Length: 520
Image (cartoon, rainbow, N blue to C red; front, side, top):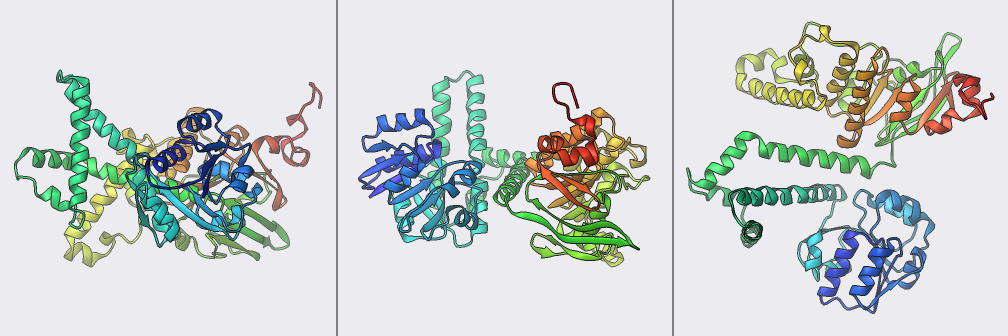
């Protein structure tokens, strides 16, 4: 049996090390030359390792192929490779789902997703796999403990938990440093802390049939551990941990469907009398992107947004959101689906504070019903407290904490735009349509707006589609950029490609936007 590895990163190295500590028998291991330094280190360490001349050679010589590259690398290299029909292919690409793997690899071979963790090099730790497979389970059971996942969506839950490894090490580091500051020898401090938590994990495993909470509840009331856990609860430590997991999950979800279209416009038209504001327009917006839409005044940008957001009825064509036909669906229904739209002129409640504006956003609040307010005051108060807590998180995220009690009507134009973004966060939007978010905003606040959009995109998994005239702002944030002209798409590409496209220069940017050797 020959095992091949495409990629020579840390997790590949950990798996190979675990294999060589185990009872797995193999003829040879073939690894790709992508990271020559790491490849040579592995070859030096283990005798039966061969460094292939390229990735295709790895496949040609192997019965099993493990893919351990970054998803963006996999997107580029996998379609160019020819896999054998009877191979077992195991992917370590955390954010590339099974369906997409099938499209990239294009073979009838067995394709499995796996989540090995660093302890696998010691022959320990869990390995989640999807879909269940007897042979792959047997393999990983020899170097860890396999958990078979029957629903792929659940795999992102396990990956999210794996994103807490560094925070666990940081906990050990904090405890160790506390001991060191108390004049404890450094090696003794680290040894004590790591041994303690290792033993605690083993104790939990020995009671794995019982709820973990039992181990918490066993602590003596009023004792040291009782005091410790309650102080951390009061401080919000565990709430922040759950929030971190939620954000990691969102990022995983966003990245895993990065290549899928969240929005698809097909032959969309809107006529006002005999005038076509939008004419047979077709475009796609990919999940996880910040897509810019530019064009001269009257090119149909805002009308297109109004059609997508349900503010106008279409004359022809269709709008798909997450593969669901939402053509002419009213805006309030789209709001509940996670499609939101901001306006060129911010629509705030002027006589309410920033915090109150945010708290107004979530729909179907119990306090909106008179009977609940009269008969269920506890429920209403609890819900309001939760909404307020979320609103506080939003103002902190957007650096608006100093303005939380300020009347929204007193905010500057840029601050109102930030508040608009904040309102989208109160309902966990999937796609946000930004209509000239930078209009009338000074350069300092424009920078803050850009930072907030980037953070929402990268950390919260938001997809943005934005109309904007400021090309510097577009260039900073957007890829791709769509150029509209006369109600339809003229060009799509990167900001640099847009700036250098002759059609765009002629119709929109103007001849002076492109020069060669100082001449037009």
